[in-house]
Amino acid sequence: MSFIETLFSNLHANPEVPFIRETHGTDIRDNNGSGMAANIGRIRHSLREKGVKAGSRVVLVAPNSALWVATDLAILAEGAISVPMYARQDAKELVAMMRDCKPRRVIVATQALKTAIKAEWARAPLMTFDEVLDTQDIVTDPPQPRSDEDVATIIYTSGTSGEPKGVMLTVGNIDHMLPVTRDHLDTMMGPREGDDRVFHYLPFCFAGSRVVLWTCLFRSNPLFVSTDLDNLSTEMGVAKPNYFLNVPVLLERIKNAVEEGVRKKPKMVQRLYDSGKKAFSKIQAGEDGAIDRLKYALAKRVVYEAIRTKIGPNLRCLICGSAPLGEDTQHWFMMLGIPVYQVYGLTETTAIATMDRPPETTVPGWVGLPIPGVETMITDEGELLLKGPNIFSGYWGKKDITETAFVDGWFRTGDQVELDDDGRIRVIGRVRNLLVPSSGHNVAPEPIEQRMVETIEGAEHVVVIGHGKPYLTAIITGNTDASTLQASIDAVNSELPHYRRVRKFHHSEELLTIENGLLTATSKLKRSAITVHFADAIDGMYA
Image (cartoon, rainbow, N blue to C red):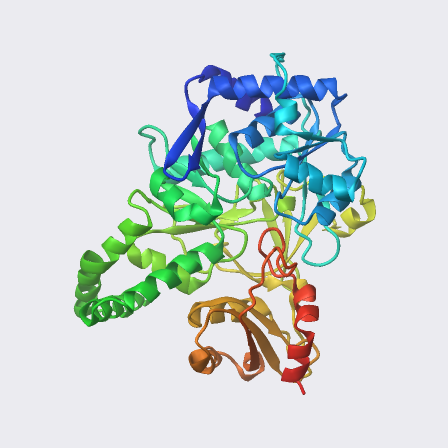
């Protein structure tokens, strides 16, 4: 039985289970199995009426909601290929991807989205949610049978350089992944006593988010879904999750906000916080004594437990993916008593290739061990190569690019990594992002950038520049204190060899965002666009 058939079986077998729990401010709107099944049946009827058949591509552009989930499942049930796209992406970029996959239908959430896309592609085969649900006819047929090789979804990569590519994930890829994630959660959370409280805010159109969604449905476990990113703290307070998937930037913001708040507390609280933090560092390094353990225990009881409760009273752990999380940030959450488990993967690996596996030791800064079925190899250049049943079948319509993505049957991740004696992986950076200053040294910018974001209070992003230049420089964005910037950079530089030190910097209060084209849809740096955008400032640093 394919994962699609399993998901449908679970919906029908659990008609009263609130599979999708939408958070709207302080309200929760439940969508149970029977209601979901009915909406799926209506959407399937509308798709058939519009000529959608097995193998047809159907684009889905909408924010997260129960209707997003119902539409995705309806497309899959009809044997079609679901092509989700990010609702906040520029309409021109959306249309370029739509034209590439040649969809039979494009389903959008609202009339406003329909109008925006129509302005760029007059003949786009568009339908809104209201239109696909405007029928009393409900298809009750079982999902169409699929083979392992059939493409289930095409997910367009972020496109940090060059045009986005459509990653084809097969039924077999997903059939392998969901039991792995289910078993991992069962081990991580322990014996289930009722449902896990799982919260999700990242867009479902991304591979990692989709795996979270499908895993919950696969386990018949409800999922709390954010509907307003501007009201995230309120929604989290309502959901009271046991765990949720994060990207590093959110965890870094939480840490920075808490530490900023501590600085406004009475001096006694500040001293207790700081002494406990220093003691915890010694404990982690194995250099602690009885006094250190006492200081940490006191700080934990008086300060850290209150912080932990404010972040999430029911939190048992956090899961972090998309990019490596900095060691300092991971240590900080551990100090509060909230373990952070990292996962690593790409869209091409069905979102996951490695993960921390509690109760085995989690090492901050490392992204865990390969998941079952995945083989690893590291080239002389340090690039990670992968094999396994989770590896995608190719890029849609791009045979030549697909061929270059593999070497002797191994998928080239493009990530520079190192391995420890136990097989854990640390991601150093992207091979193609390596900077080679005129000194001839190879410099991965990501670790330096991460360390600076952790050190510079208020920094949102740091972008290190220096390929072919006499020294490294940096673009720093965010609401930072200009008077302390140099001191923070000096502190980071003191930990680095001379060729990895940042000699000059440009501070910009303008943030890097998806909307201004300087971040990808998954909030990764668009380095080429950033270099062009800040060209004058960069030239000034090398004048």
